[in-house]
Image 1 (cartoon, rainbow, N blue to C red):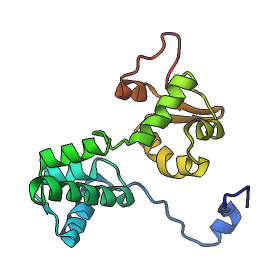
Image 2 (tube, one colour):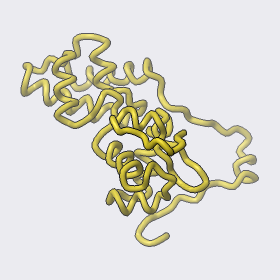
Image 3 (tube, rainbow, N blue to C red):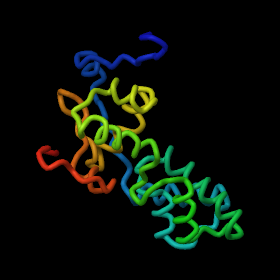
Image 4 (cartoon, rainbow, N blue to C red):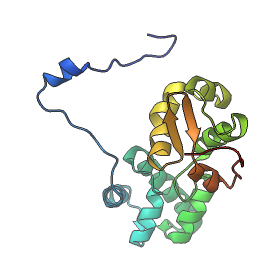
Length: 183
């Protein structure tokens, strides 16, 4: 135990090799998330009208533990605003009310990126510093937010720390510094 945080020890390479077969899990593909949303919608008895709405309900985040709660919130919003029917407009309005953008970034994702860009000139900046500046736990940033930001190319990890990429600047509508080389 380090401080109040429990760390899981990773297996060493020699020990891992003794298992014979190791697997690497990738992010879900869009079609798989849509299938998961379809199954979840059936269980929730949510009425989704078009396949495009299913895609938007998942909001591009490639993980069921994010997509399924989003579906529930969109369903709840649809219950209040549209008699339970989930369509494009209801989905867009619900996600806007939840402050989730078209790429699936929520307030914390944006807060992390904006902190790196605005407080630390785009980086590099260490995870502890990001954690202190955003009031988010280091483990939460590393395990929940960072993988998706890395996957979509908004964040880069360097030996000196995290760096916001040119894609992040563009998405957030922040002008990149003239003299700053971005990833």
